Length: 420
Image 1 (cartoon, one colour):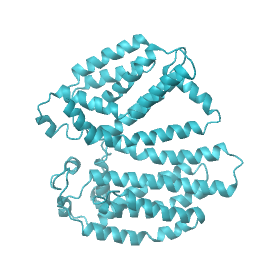
Image 2 (tube, one colour):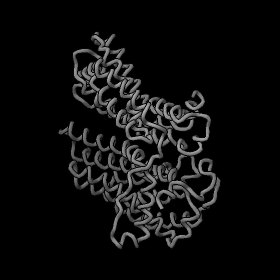
Image 3 (cartoon, helix red, strand yellow):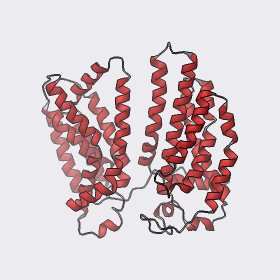
Image 4 (cartoon, one colour):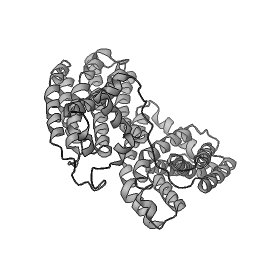
């Protein structure tokens, strides 16, 4: 059991901890922008741990725990339904070790609960509620059990009951939560294979006949729901930053307000493109079988451009209520950044920064020009053909049988096998 826990920590949990920094920064940022930040912090602390207070903050903490466990789950369970079943470890022990590893990835929730306990006792001198204190670790464990895919649905149902019962922080409900966790452990079975939410099966003839649409569809099938949540975390912070600045500062100058929308929009697009491209580098390695299909390198590159540009267009759409004109300027960067992403994916597997480094450098140039001169977005748009040409060259020169420590060889990659 200890060896299995060490393996989960080194293989997946430690990598998944980076999501804690993003969520922690978002929480600190949101509370810091409040006019009555000390009062809100005190209210949150008392809701988490003190007696005679509500449990609104505990509900928010539950959502954070679910998000952290969901992001970490694909990494922690990697190999759990494959070669790990040949180890001399029972299915129950493997599942429990995965739950403990998922609980460890919720480091932000653990730190927040500990800080609330210390602050309530020493700073606010509030009485500690035993039910809320016991309920905090139950929330963390139950959130891990809820996000872990298991063979039997009864285990997931009992885990959900345990999570719901742990939120209010009452001793009676904590007892029900513990009983539900025990029932979930007895009925869950082994860890099941995780399958992402399937993409809608388009029935139109043009979609079935279009190589670009099929390439986009196959790529989306390799991206899990948990990965999608992780991809959207950083862009959401930058968009919220723009909203908070403009809504809380009505006396802000027009030029500064317009520039704020452009800068935050560019940062959000950069974060979204970098996260999406890096996740594709991990889940869609180059596979020799793809080269046997009647899809050209240009069609594959255009498929990646369409997918990234469509995702990036969501950022200016969200910014339209703030400033429609400058949101339109941000929208001009969606296509060139999509082309940069398509090129970076072809070289990301051999770089320490994956595809994110190249995208960040391009976004820095485009974003600086856009911040100083809004019409520079048209110039950036004109660079798209050159970027697509570079991406096509990388696609044609890609070595599809290179050694990979994770997959060993590109042939028979499970992500593409499930999508075919």
